[in-house]
Image 1: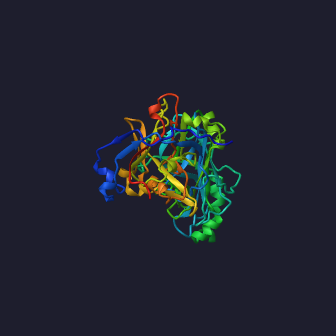
Image 2 (image 1 turned 135 degrees about the vertical axis):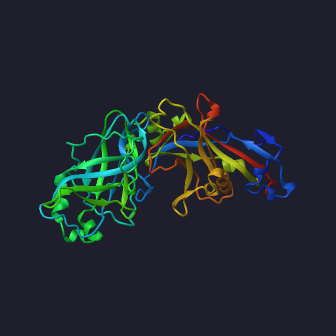
Image 3 (image 1 turned 30 degrees about the horizontal axis):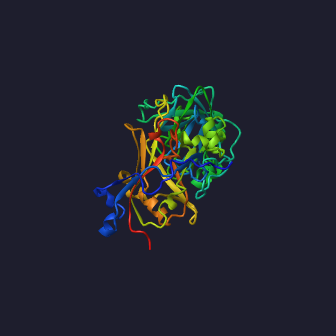
Length: 446
């Protein structure tokens, strides 16, 4: 369906009003470099046409090697189902393992350090663990929806563990971290590890990874609304530990470590947003009427918002313009679920370079957080994102893009979501999604 345009108003020159004074920051983009007799005035507008609508994130963000991987299952009242897990290599802590005569496993525990719980931590989620049957390849790009072959048997010992209740404020006193411990079947430990005592499979990393390719850890159900956490797999306390005994000792331990060298791949499934809010579904399907009321954001390769300025070039046709300050302003819609669904701390903006064919962060971001902004203001419920240089480049024809992507920071590592006012809300018009611009016009082009 053809997208409709949602206008904040077509700007005609002369604009709303003229600011006759010029603050120091107005020289940021080059105002001070212009001859004084060329400068007209510093002007302001916030009524330019902005087209904005929410879409599903494309599968272009790599999820291997990220700082954290998400794990959990959640039914969000606005965004619907979120299922999160990961694939991970477990490596040898030492070579040449010899488990001794009469060796047998007592337990096999997958320990995961986690933080940033999101959702209802009082309603648990269920985790399943499978052995990988497909190699994790270094240098290959893996994405959020990448599905790898794994064994059909669930390795979780369900007699010991049925549900995960995230307890973010309860640290394990022995190691000083918040962890979950997932007991795996001792039959797997015996057949996969104990049976290979002093074998060639334990003589090198390459041989071991060829024999044991890793684990697929995934949450597949929740009671109630559920939750999602961020797992720090490279923490020293995230590992697979086998407790066993032999004829000489009643208690021995062998560890399989997860290090920086271990390949780690995130997996996230949103069920194609079939359970999401009707307005969000409509925007994703091309019917953007609801974008005038609400815009949506979600991490986990979830939802981003497309932003366009369809008439910005015509506004300054045959004019020489200096942009001193340009900001996108997004105002959060209050809801009653902030205890479960905390407000994201910041938003980012990038664009797809149609010539270079890859995503590029707007140049304003490179000038530092204080300049770029994008941080949530609790007093005003606003996010203000500086795109001064980006807009100047767009007007000068130096950017190979006709739209921007706005999204929540840390999109691949932690769960978060946001709903803001759209481009033309029926109420609270002053909270609309908009572009604010301070600029100067020079002499007409000759």
